Image (cartoon, rainbow, N blue to C red; front, side, top):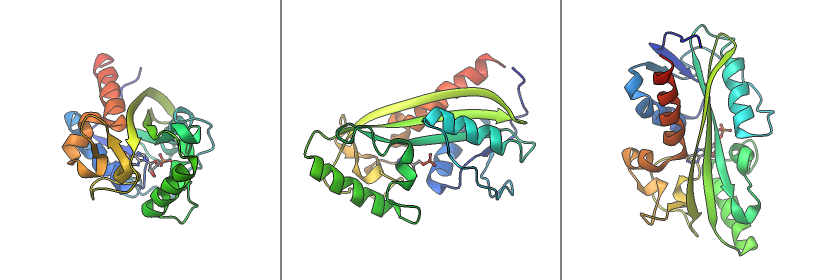
Length: 201
Ligand code: IMP
């Protein structure tokens, strides 16, 4: 595998929550972590894949054609058992293109109340690292939890206020950033990618 210079790396996202988490998760690489805006990439790549892995790959490869820097793409979302795995890859657009995190959480709680079933769920994160249009590495991380009946906590982003970590009986939004990183799908995917990167150095 060709190893790019990792002094600077672009995270293929416009989501501030994800970016903040990556700045911590990638700290061992000592890279400067840039957003799409920082890298002056204003094109948006459509997520047309049918899985988290396909979408992460698509974003990483496509965005890496707009910059000379390596690009790390994250495609992630929430799979709820009683909703047959929805919202899944549609997590970001679950309540429509203009909806807020609060709108998405509200819709999820309504749908789950109607389903009146079990409340187990999992977060999934697929990562893909690409450089110069070439896919270099991929990884995936998951974490299991329970969807609460009302939002709790003010930290994190997205569905964090309703995602309860059973061992702690706290939502991701009630954890500090460091605590969330002990359990999260994203931290597991990032750890596995960093391991592979070290092994191929
Ligand atoms: P995408 O990967 O940009 O397509 O969007 C992922 C969506 O899944 C986000 O907009 C959030 O709604 C949700 N999501 C992914 N990871 C997390 C997380 O760690 N906490 C809460 N919500 C998340």
